[in-house]
Image (tube, rainbow, N blue to C red):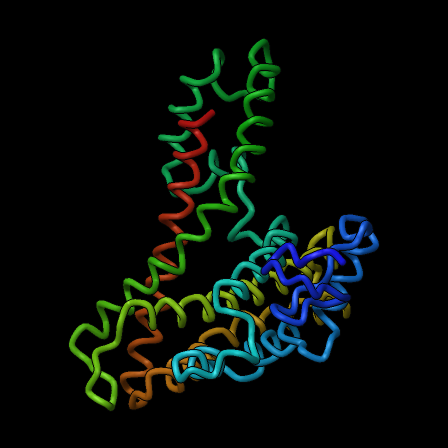
Length: 288
């Protein structure tokens, strides 16, 4: 009888009686096996993915509050959930203006300044940025390389949002303690930031899906487009309300403090978007 490769137990059956690991099978690395594992993760009785997503959307702040109080087995870990939602955002990102970047857009909109972008691109391509004339082919080659690199870079730099927002929350609560008198640690704020951003990414992914449903643009005199625009507006306007309720539940603050913390969180998020856009350009430009 073969032994368990995980713990060495000699009594290996379908599942190891010592550590619970399934016995290796020749089909473990086949595509059907991966597909069955994915479906099982979503639909099995454990159901952490569905349960976590439902709690994230329907009960603002519950995931963070339960995690900080030690009730964790029912849900995905905060970082797992955040990364899962990031995948959904990246799929929808081409339709989300906040996370849709290209050289053409950098040449038109700040930050950084389009004048600075134009000057830098002029140094990188022999004939500057032009769609016509002898330098057009060189510029188009550079543009394709830039757009491919910026698409790869944005997926890693976006992970910096959570620790940065957790730092902002740490500063906001530097002089405030929990009701039991214990000061709040940075890690607690990081859990809240991961969950809050996961919800924000879900909303933006939803906006991306709405944008994809109207590839020619929204024409508001069309009933379908008016409905889609209304859905997008509801999603975006619902974000501040959601964050208010999440802050209130997790930090147990009075309403004036809840509004102040939520406003500071949203201002920090908006500022980070601008910093992120600038960082993305420069990291892409200097790594080409």
